[in-house]
Amino acid sequence: MDKIFTKNEIIDLLENDSKNDWLFKIADKVRRENVGDEVHLRGLIEFSNICKCSCKYCGLRSENKNLERYRMSKEEILSCAENAVKLGYKTIVLQSGEDVFYSVEKLCEIIREIKKFDVALTLSIGEKTYEEYSALKEAGADRYLLRIETTDKNLYKKMHPNMNFENRVACLYNLKTLGYEVGTGCLVGLPEQTFDSLAEDILFFKDLNADMIGIGPFIPNQNTPLSEAKGGDFWLALKVMAITRIMLPDINIPATTAMETLNPNGRLIALQSGANVVMPNVTSVQYRAKYEIYPNKICINDSPDKCRSCIEGKIKSIGRTISKNYGFHKI
Ligand code: SAM
Ligand code: SF4
Ligand code: FES
Image (tube, rainbow, N blue to C red; front, side, top):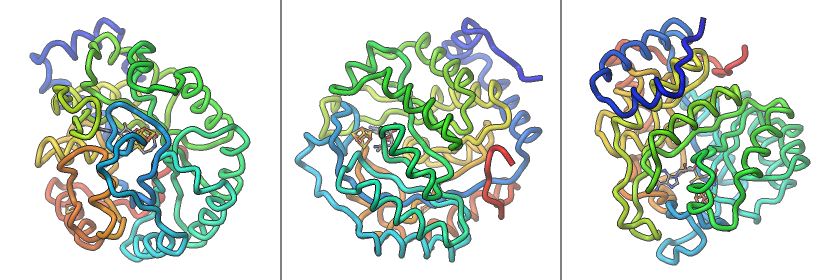
């Protein structure tokens, strides 16, 4: 049976470092018993850094004038996807800012072409209407990543001018209704975020019965209003991830890029503390540095081939294997 921590138990684990080793060990055991030793690789294409939103923490926010913007053409996106398939990826993730240039029609065309490569397809392109999500699903999208970021409504409001917490939650439930595998998650270390609100985040993941949860430490970006913020702690983010694994034993949990940005062994530590997924970048090198959500992002000068062999070596070094399957939550 799933181990369900109470809210107070979660807060205690987050506040206190004395049980960290125990927590990471149990999360690793739960991961092994429920999803095995295979690591699923998802090839990430960051196809546009243009965004109409103003999330206070993000370097892609529309107000940031210190960022050279780009949009990849359909042909460029398909070429990245084809290359990823050649490198053995069984899932392609299309991620961007909220960029209205890509109409639902354009996106559907791209989705249909990518699905011809016999891969699972994940979208991470922000909030859309029920009808839009429905059309994208119809075109072949299998999964959707939309982090709730924080379940603390006051903090959500402060972090997301012109956005609405209730709408974000509604988007997640709409995606579920439409049959997507739904991924969500939170940022750890936002200004004024409390242990209480992180515990609520984890309980929200459980309530939603998510298929995938991505946890990332918040990393301050100099070109945002939060440039002077303290930023998230690697170990606290790892704890949130480990507790999530124990609470939702068989879901997919990525070892996130932001974790590796804060700790040079971050992804391997995460894979040994509950994670079973890695999302290497398969975007062509010319665009990588421009998708600057936060500073010092890893792999910005590396090619897709380099990242593929790098991550394979790392995964094998801890005795794990790379999955040859699509890596769905529900088989
Ligand atoms: N625009 C889409 C969205 O927001 O869902 C997808 C792209 S967005 C760049 C992907 C994720 O980046 C967000 O969900 C957020 O958690 C994360 N992110 C943004 N700024 C960050 C920062 N400064 N540090 C760490 N993660 C950040
Ligand atoms: Fe845009 Fe997503 Fe960044 Fe918010 S987090 S500014 S929606 S890219
Ligand atoms: Fe990109 Fe290691 S994953 S260089």
